[in-house]
Length: 116
Image 1: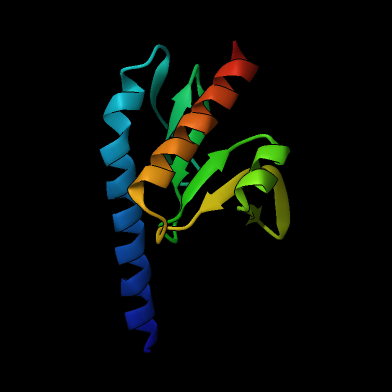
Image 2 (image 1 turned 45 degrees about the vertical axis):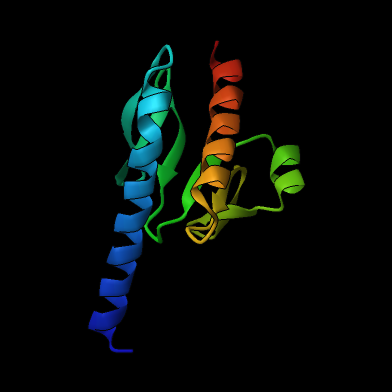
């Protein structure tokens, strides 16, 4: 694949990931203190100003969860700048929307509990 082709593929994945997050957003935004917020060069869903979910550049769903929950779900941890993020994980774009919804609900509950 050419460099241009790989860039287009990434943009398509990023767009699909954001579209899926947009599909989940109305139910989340109806909850108290939930809003969109900028983080890591994109917009994510936040509760009381703390982001709990966003569509990553590769289209995956990035979520903030307790480390033990990440392990239970078998998710890969996010790596940023060569550093593994302890409480941030990625849910692949290939996972179904129901899994995204359930994990986003978990992420909201976790961040809601630590920012109350």
